[in-house]
Length: 283
Image (cartoon, rainbow, N blue to C red):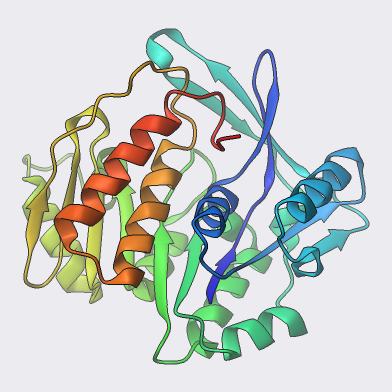
């Protein structure tokens, strides 16, 4: 079983809206691929929350894993598409997913020795969310690996959150902007390999996955350093969710024990496909 915990929300584009949130995108792709996935989140008792619950039920998720918040509204992100297909995200604060509780359902799932637990940094922006991930880290069994997708969004993280996330991670995925945040970019330029090796050894991380957008990606383990060639999207509609797609296929390859080159090829191809559709999830 794969346990994914974190935000589910609506991405509000100028002309349409889509269900999203990095953890949910990750969970959705793996479930569509046939993996046993449990997804923990929290929504408000509102129209958006009811739409999300209906969508989850339609796609065979256990809606009993979704906490219902009587006070806070369902999360939303207002997305502005800028020239060059860049995006500006306005992530609304103090929404339902900021208050996910470490309840009996979560405790039982963590205690059931899932093969993989996925988490990110956004839900840790509140003390409730930060404590939630600390509990996951402390209560998981030795058989469970923790997959951290850093996803550093402006004004939604701190050095405390970064340190705790790195300490917890067995597998770390991040992009180049994020790795430069971890390594003081004001100092003399350092190669991607040296930065990744430093983070991996200092924090005892088994695998670091560094995505480079249209320049491909790099993987770093104790015994391997692998560089992929980029895959060009047929037509870029928007890039929202491409990193989550890459993360999901990376996890799939790791869990299935596939050769690294095959895993990376699948991840690159799928991320490129996601760039060719509206939103993060294929129909």
